[in-house]
Image 1 (cartoon, rainbow, N blue to C red):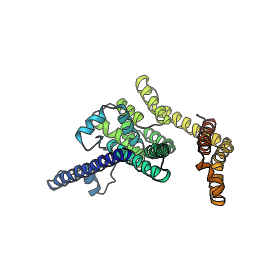
Image 2 (image 1 turned 90 degrees about the vertical axis):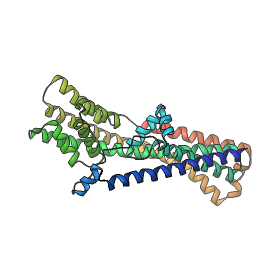
Image 3 (image 1 turned 180 degrees about the horizontal axis):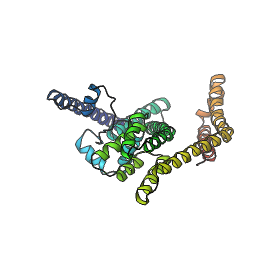
Image 4 (image 1 turned 120 degrees about the horizontal axis):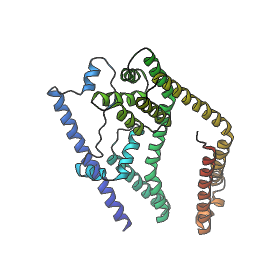
Length: 323
């Protein structure tokens, strides 16, 4: 019964991959026809003229299959996953990412069942294999958001310099979009494009704050919106905001220094039992093998792994100080 269930899931995953590949070929054919009749992408014309292309457009479909796209759009989880994919800088659609998670879960399930020949171990492997792509995506998001936060004070300084030179706020935003590195460049380019298409600056900035998970950006958007409502010197407001962000980075650096010992202790306490177990398996396999043979030994290993996980999470919460 278990093998039949796995076979059905693998067949469904394979069929979904084949359908997605066929739809992708159709999209490539449509794009080729558009190029042949002269309807070129504006970014292609920009590259032909020697300019640098900005990735300001994004395919918002959640799947290449229309019925699956309509189904996923009704789910709150799918919309949250779409935002996570965007924040991680991935062009993958939600449907394809869910397919990767399902394929990883099934492959891990088969590996766990073949290696251990036990249903419980196979289910544990399946959960790990299904969650692994999500953890990788969260890691990519954190890296991209960290890069945004590190470059954002320089972008604000460039914006302030442009405003002091007498340039309008919209033109100053365009300068930041042209001169800043990624991901600052793309985000500000989207704001400029939205405003050029008729969206108010307040809404364009609010959309950027919703897209980017950055507290510093929310400070910036709040300051600009308040200045537009109440008036005042925008240059001075942005200069103070830039100084506040740099002070936050300085405090975060001090916190990283003060909590270095705690983070190192957590890493050692997490890796030491696993390293000792690997060492025992290599040096005295007949001594450690009893932990796998006896039910009580497997229970102790499971309890120990659970306590290690809880301890690592507790240490992480202690040293993760918010500013």
